[in-house]
Length: 197
View 1: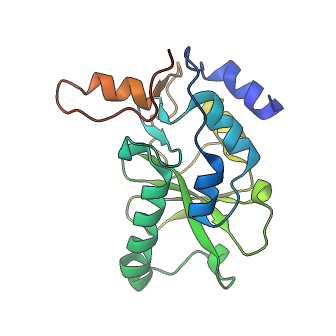
View 2: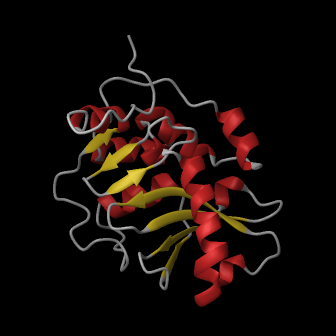
């Protein structure tokens, strides 16, 4: 376990039941880029789910579409190209030709958390961008996803975009499976990955 993830597990209790890892090769083929190693280890440990009843951690090809990184990335790309960039300037991080965003998280308030992907870049050194719900404001962090989550949950970093009440004093991670079960009386949303036996 990498040191960043080891520190995160001390702050954010990990799920009791480990889940099968996503098909990383298929996900990277669909995205046409490699994903950061820390993120893959993070998802292999936690899976998709909700942090402090606010931030949704996405994983590729999740059957629970609320947590599907591929779905959110495609939707945000279309929304940004056909709407947002027509009215708001792109962040300067996207000035390089063929640069793009991959969405690794979102929130209940409509904020989006991205990696900036540039041709030939190092996936493990990609900056993170957070976009507010209006699309007007952006924040940049030169951290991995795991380091960012650790810094936010330990209050070492305070975002001006994310909800004022995040993080909560006592941290909680609920898997996509748990969240699907808790909502099953209203809808039959599938869990992200089948429960281990």
